[in-house]
Length: 363
Image 1 (spheres, one colour):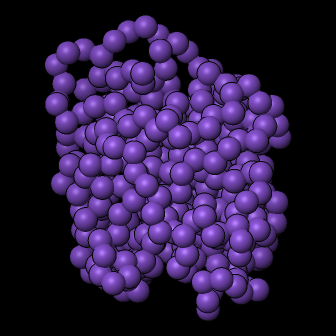
Image 2 (cartoon, helix red, strand yellow):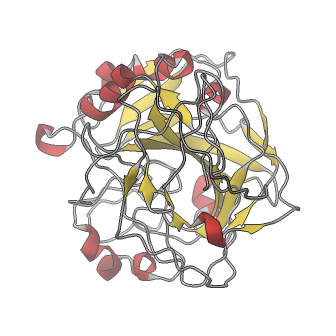
C-alpha cells in the first residue's frame, strides 16, 4: 500500500480532510501569475497578447472554451495530471533539487498580489534551482491552489486523491533573459509543486505570508510584505519527487513546463487553511475558492520518480485526530496506466510521516 511522505516538522502533516469532488467552475484559477500557469497578460479574455508575462492570466471564460481561443489548451501534454504510483518509473539520474538564494532576508520587501485567480508572491530572479533539473532555473513567482472547507483543491492528484491545497514555485530557464522569453520554449519553465494538508500545529513559515492576506482581500490589490526565508514554504526534503513534462494550467497552456511534484507534503493548521480558503475575493466580490484545473490525460507521457516506490500493508494506527482523513478520491482522473511516452515526472508519493510519525495509507 503506497503512502505519501510529509516532512517531520511543522512543514508537513497528515493528509488533508476529504471533500466532495469539486467542480472546476468558471475558468478555474489554476497556475496563475508566472507559475506553471504563469499565463498571459491579456487585454481581452479571448485574444492573448504577444508578450507573455509571469503576472498570470485574465480568465473570463469557462474552461471548456479555453481551447477555442488558446489551441494549446487542447493539446496532448497538458497539466495537471493524476500520478498513478503503480505506473511511475524510477530514474536513478534524477538528483536532489538544490536551491540557492531562497532566503531573501536582504530584500527590501516582496510584492504580494490578489490577481483574482490566486494569491501571487513575486520572487527575485536571484533565487535559483541549480541542481536536479536539466539546467539552472531562475525564480519568477509562487502561488497557490486550494478548494474550500468541504472540498480539497490541489491541482495534481495522487492515485486519484486530491489534497487540501498545492503550492507552485515558478521558474524560467537561465538560458533566457526573462520569463516572457522562456514561456513559449520547450522546457523553458520549471515548477516546483508540493501538496498542502491539514496538521495539528501552526506552520510558522507559512504564517509569514498568510498573515498578510487581509491586505490583499480584493481582486487587484497588492501589498509589500517583509522578506522571509522562502525555502521554508517547501518540504523539508527535496530529494524525493515525481517529474513529468507538461504545461501551464491556465491559458495560454503552453507546453513548456518541467514539473517536479515533491513526495513530502506540507502541513498547515486548520485555522491557516481557513485563512487561505476564505480570505481572498475574486470578481464581484465572490470568495475565491476551487481555483484548480481538473487532471488532464497523460496521452502516453511517462511519469518518473527520483526514488524507488515501496509497498506496505501496514494500516494506520487507530488513535489520530478525527479531522485527519484520507484525501478525496476523484473518479474523473485519467491515469493512463501503462502508457509510454516522452513525458517525465519525478517523485511519487511514498510513506506519509509527520510530526508524530504516523503513517496513513492511501487507499
